[in-house]
Length: 230
View 1 (cartoon, rainbow, N blue to C red):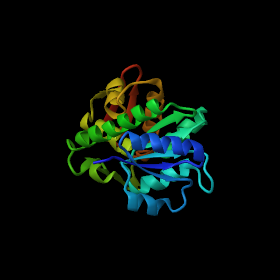
View 2 (cartoon, rainbow, N blue to C red; view 1 turned 90 degrees about the vertical axis):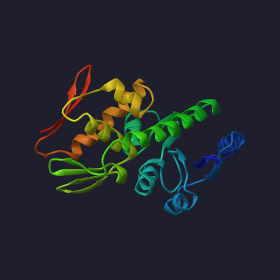
View 3 (cartoon, rainbow, N blue to C red; view 1 turned 135 degrees about the vertical axis):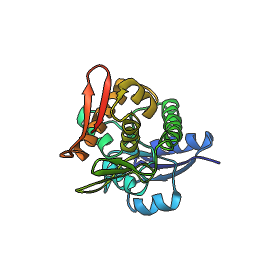
């Protein structure tokens, strides 16, 4: 079965090249020039992966990613953009992006990154299956299959990456998770780019547990993380 790609790009010339090339490679591609009615589009097309330009008319790619995450927390999202400042990278990952490719890019690199994201998604599913349906973390409850963390303050809808990282921490609760191992399992490699991405997600997870007694994510410099559940 063909993998389905939702591609949102307002540069028509670039969009035609990307769409035609991906279709020749066996992908089914739905191209849109903007993110209007994105909820309806994602719901009806049901993509396996999304390619989003950041600078779009009406609504930017970061905002689109947030909307998409509300529909499908597990969906890989690759940003395609000329914006590569650190703040943009952090904003992209915080909005739910799973990879970031700088324009101009080669189609060979884009396809490799897409294939890597799809492999990671399949591997992620097997890791999460090793966890119970409900993980009790003191006064919090983590539901891996639903991508939800229930806290005294309310329900947090987690992204796929947040769920993966928290799942790995839960598997190794009260022991050490090696940083390199975590990067390789969640992203497929331990590059500097992915390492910065991991830092963003760890900060977000710490924020979700802020104020929770007996829960702490301790950084072990040069080693990894110790997830304290006491």
